[in-house]
Amino acid sequence: MMGLLASVLIATATDTSGLVPTSFAEIATYFTFQANLIALLVWGALVFYAWRGGLRPRWLEYGRAFAAANLVTIGAIYWIAIAPLGLQDGPQLVYVMIIAHIITPLYAAAEQLLVGPREPLPWRHVWLITIYATVWVSIAVIRASFGAPAVYDYLEPARGAVAVGFGLTWNFAILVTASACAMRIRRWRRWTQDDSAIAHHSRASAGVGARARVAAQGKDAVQGVTVAAGASTTSG
Image (cartoon, one colour):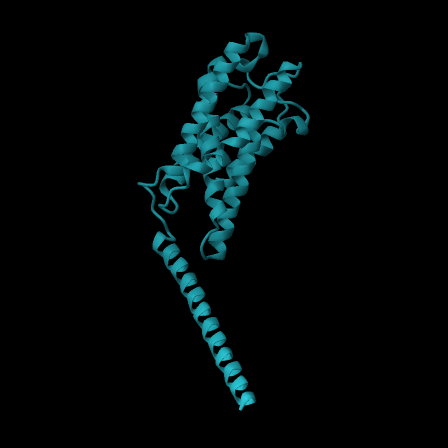
């Protein structure tokens, strides 16, 4: 999957059909490109920690949820609002469309739903999953209002504030729903590093800490007795 994702990013950056901006700096501003790049980094981190062994860090669960929610949102928006206007022309862009808007969203959703710890992520952290896309589309709409090209036709300012607002609303609804599913649905998960291992690791750490505190208290008590005995000897 990482190889497919890398090939999509390369195919997008090297397309010569004229339907993709020729400037890499402009291509890099596209949310689909950015979200797939982030997913590539997250999945690369998963491979690294699997190779290294041991428990994966907690932040990686948030990275997986981010990748899954945003890639699924990209796929849904594409098929609802963009594909009906006409699929891309040329084999290179069709390849990009299939991978970026079908394969990676389905893979990210399956990977998130079926693999990982069963403990859900706290709902109060949903903003970590939604903030990036929210800020990106807000900036895109503001730029379009000042004459920059609209990222999607249905967000074109010329359509009117109500139409643009409706587009942003259903985009955000999809994003929040996908984020909630990525963070909370755990019933189908099968974990190679099960929750008992995490619990055991936590209990072991707690046990080490408790033993250290007991040892420190014992040391303090011994020192106190020694000082008291010294004082008594001096007095005598």
